[in-house]
Image (cartoon, rainbow, N blue to C red; front, side, top):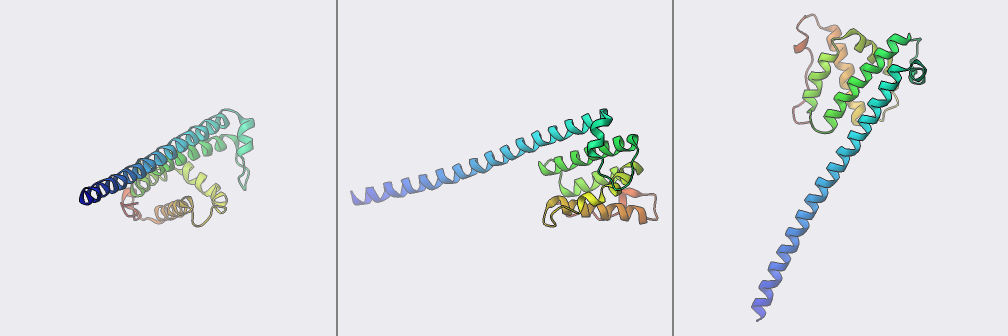
Length: 168
């Protein structure tokens, strides 16, 4: 009888451990799912606000925080460049794009002169980012990429720069 009780306790203990592990796994998945949902909602809201600003000069004026005078048409282009950049960051954040894939995507965007102008015009915006943040690190990666592309003595822009490790 004592042996049976001991055996039952072991089975119950093992079942509790398995249940705790499964519960923790589901909780982690649920947390990731909620995080993705929040990011998706934030991305939609950001895009909607940018679109409204691109369509309405009075709203675009609210986002005019450049250090120099930027004509309205250029502001609209900068807002669109921002939307493209944020879209790429969003895909990276949800795990749909690795850091190396993001790098390749940004390298293509950097081929456009208006995008490079936007990046330079918003340099002072990135100074307020915490150095420990991922966005700060991605901004530095982008700064380096832009500089490497400008310094390159080749027309083969797709080989310029060193993409980050594939794992991140």
